[in-house]
Image (cartoon, rainbow, N blue to C red; front, side, top):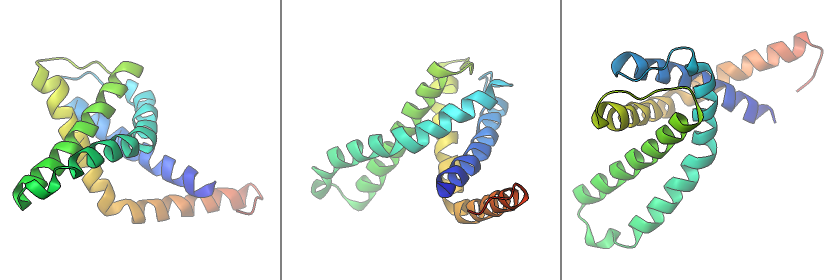
Length: 147
C-alpha cells in the first residue's frame, strides 16, 4: 500500500508541474484546475496509459518485421504521442482545464509536453519516489504507525 501511495503522490506533484507548464506554454487555461486535473492525469497515467500502450504496441508488433529501425522508432514515438493524446483528452473531459487556440495548441502541443514529462519522470522517478517514501515514513513515525 505504501508503494502505491508514494508513487501516486510523487506522480501527482510532478503532474501539477506538467499541467502548469502546459498552461504557461500554450493557450490552455489551467489555473487552479491543475489541482484536480493532476489527480485525473495521474489516475489516467496509472490506469489508462498501460492499457492503451499495450493495445497499440500489440497492434504495431504485427507489422514490426516489415519496418526499418528508423521506421520502428517512428512507430514507437507515434504510440507514445497517441497515448499522451488519449490521457490529455481524458484530462480535458473530466476537469476544468480548457484547451484554447487552434487544434495544434489545444490537442497536439500538450500531449507532446506530457510525453516529454513522462520521459523526464522516467529518468528521475527512483529518486523522487525514494524521497517521497522518506517523507511518508517520517510522517508515519510522527503519527505512531509502523509501515
